[in-house]
Structure formats: C-alpha cells, structure tokens
Image (cartoon, rainbow, N blue to C red; front, side, top):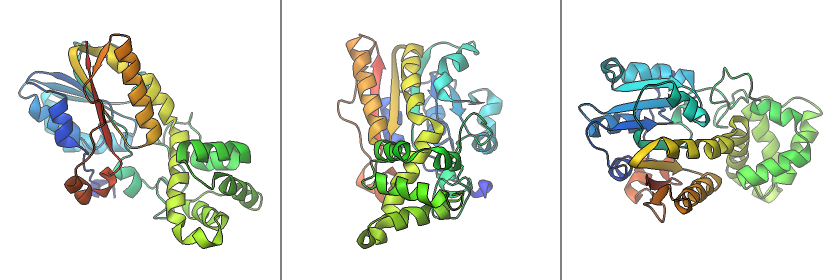
Length: 302
C-alpha cells in the first residue's frame, strides 16, 4: 500500500556535509521522492531556508504533501510534479534567487520497487509498465518496448543499459515468445529470461533478470537523456559558490555525471570537490543494501 511505503535516503550525512548548507539557503531537490534528503536540507537551512522539490510521480508527491505538510504550509518547501530535464523551465516560473545547493538522487525509489504495482521488480507478478509517471502517454511502457522492438534493438538495449552478458539470447527468446502470446507481465518476462539462459546458469536467473529490468526501466523513462539535459541547467542555476551533488547507482549514470562535471570544470564554470566518488559506509550498506552501488559526486560553481 502507498500509505505504508517508506524510503531510506542514501548518503544522507554526506550530502548535507558536502552541500555546505547554511541558514537561509535556497536549495533544489530535483528528485525529492520520499523527502528524506529534503527534510535534512530544510533542517540544516532553518529557520528561513527553502527547498524546491521535483518528482515525476504524482502518487509519490501526494504522499509527500501529507508527510511534509507543515514545511509546505510554512512556505519553506514547494513541491512540483515534473521532469528535471525541464529544470530551466520549472525555475523560470518562480521568482526566486539562484540556487545555493542542488541535489539529484538518481536512484529508483523503494516505492517503485515495493508498492507501485508497475512492474519495476520481478518479485511480484505485475503489469509491465515501468513509467515513473503512469499518466505520461508520451512514454512507451515496458510491455510496448518488449512487443515492438526488433531483436537487434533489444540486444543493444539489454547490453548497453543492463550490461547483460546474454543480451542476444534473451532478445531472441522474447521475439520467439511474443510470436505465440504477448508478454505483458513481470512473471511472463522473468520466465522468458530464465529459459533463455544456459541451463547451468538458470539458478542465477534473478541476477540476469535484474539487469534486463534495469535496462527496460532506463529506456522507458529516457533516464540518461534526462540526466544529460538537466546537469547543464542545474549548473547555470547555481549561485557563485553554490554546490551541486549527484548520487548515481549505475555506471552509465556515473559516467555522465563525471564527464559533465569535468567538462564544466574545463569551461571554468565548476570546481570539482570529489575527485573520486563518495561511497556508502559498510554500516549504511548493512542497514540499507540498496545503497551498495551508490556514488556521490559534488562540484562547486565558480
């Protein structure tokens, strides 16, 4: 149930420390999600600091408005439904100063895995949707991608976005199965992936399925394109000495952030604070295994 959902923010102390938050700061949480990072930012910038929070999922924002209603009513927190790829447009609609801090947590929400019912996880049999915003008719669902892409396209998708060793085998198995009947649920897709693997590796099907599901999610939501579009807009919106922090969970995401920061540093717009990404402590990973792959990079506006 949505009301029971809880999300644990990753690298929370490290984010607050490296953003160098101060009272009265104007901040952006471009992926506000459950509000864990935003609540900590509000506490660190009290009593007059403000946060603009953005999320693509209307269900998540409805819950957040209830959880952080006092902060919203006080005017210190504003939440907006939208895609951070449209950041400049979102900011342009608000009469506010340039940002002192900006945070992007690129990880998928625990809500989407555990409670959304949209097929992000194969732990339960659910419809293959995978859209962060289920009302966005411009996005193809995962079921549509599986139904309409040629084997070559699916192979490239699974290889590039999922780094899946058996991408071609799985793609060909999908094409063969859908010729007999549509693949519309997570259970059906998991079965195809499992049978496509060499027999001696089928006991590890969950690992391969996780990569396939990840690839479909990235493709459905056009995640990498959004990151590439948003980072320059965020840098432009920062005040001098303002900081940007990005938490990534995938090598392709981290590469985009690393190279984006480096290019802005070479252009004289940023100073990179974290030459190597900050990783979660062993204690954090033990408490929250989903934090294991997180990487935090931070840079400062010049």
